Image (cartoon, rainbow, N blue to C red):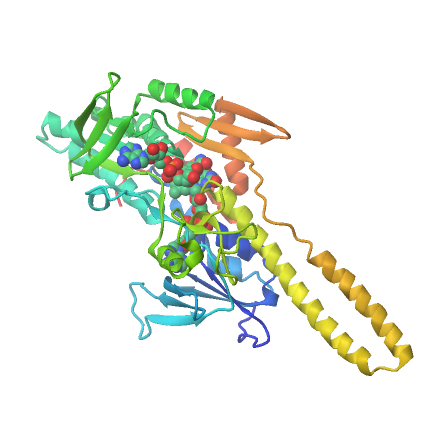
Length: 476
Ligand code: FAD
Ligand code: NAD
């Protein structure tokens, strides 16, 4: 759409973030009804389900990124996008503060953006639970930059381990790949990494055969707590076959540059602190609140008891703030923090906002009609009253939008060695499956869920490329 100035007769809708929640809202929103402003430090949407595949080069990261400009240019009315981070939301003043933190510095680096309506879709941060050393020494797996860093570090470990005169002990440490967190992120990454080793690294660097080792560390008694018992067992036995070590009941307490210290719960009930040396450490222990969200919560008395995120009602309105909505990982609506939930919430808000705009238009017309009928002659009045009743009926129909309800399509995760696990809802029943067929299902499901045809083609090419030529082991 061509660039046009904001229309003073329309409300300003500010959307924070370009992740699953916000982009799903933008995709479905009739942007003609509002002056829409999007603020996000990331000028692209990222298809997170395939991010673990980028850490080993099975997929190139650009194949799962979709520029936000590309998404917005297809909208009917212009939408403004600012690549900036929202540093503060002032709820009373109805403004957000945005800071441009890019490498290229302009004269203006920060500004205020007023809003009539605000959607918070800023996602979450990586949880570290204040454990010392995590931020300094571990890699996370949330953003494109994280995957690139991991990819580089895997090769760095391999090249350094094979340096002339490296001691056997140091070789073992450098080739020990430790993953902390047995949620789906940790499990998928461990699987991808072992694949990389089996399918490519062994071919190119055979001397690391006996020393390259992947260990998954989990505090709870089992991995993948959101999956059914049968699939947990399947994953654990499949990891065993692939020679990935799972260390359950092992809670990391401290991280240094060369080893982690973990508290191990032993079968006899005693606890022991163990030092585990590593070359690469990937930290995937779930979500924590972003500071901008924490700050907003502190401004709203109704959020005083909220802990895990912005508490919202069944219409996704932030409790205690009638003109602010929240979607995705930063909102607490009794659902898991997943892409599936965020996308459905975003689509729901789009429907709600499209409806609200229609309602406003009908209400304005109704007001005009009732003013007209007050001064009209009896014949005209009859016609106007009929029209009013028609409009009122229309209004009631439009207003009938029910609250948000989440429809769970199932859980799906890749576990390496061309196997996947799936708990899928099928009509009224549930199907739990694991194995190679599930892997093909996983592949086709994720391919079909990719944002655009362009993404789909790129991912497909990457898969074919990796299959025929192997993954690229050059370190960038
Ligand atoms: P995000 O998608 O994280 O987006 C947040 C957006 O806000 C980003 O654009 C960010 O740049 C922006 N932002 C951050 N701070 C600010 C700020 N201060 N101001 C403005 N903007 C800001 N879920 C599934 O359902 N299935 C899967 O297979 C799956 N796989 C995953 C794999 C990985 C490796 C990871 C990390 C997650 C996975 N998830 C999966 C979870 C899923 O990605 C999240 O639940 C989902 O991204 C949440 O969407 P969101 O819109 O809340 O946040
Ligand atoms: P998670 O919260 O699902 O799992 C984190 C795990 O880390 C937990 O099992 C926890 O017990 C463990 N942990 C925490 N502290 C620890 C410590 N100090 N030492 C050892 N273990 C520790 O986190 P995630 O895997 O990053 O997933 C985040 C969200 O994204 C979840 O809602 C998940 O469902 C979703 N996700 C889904 C998929 C998928 O569906 N395929 C993939 C990735 C992420």
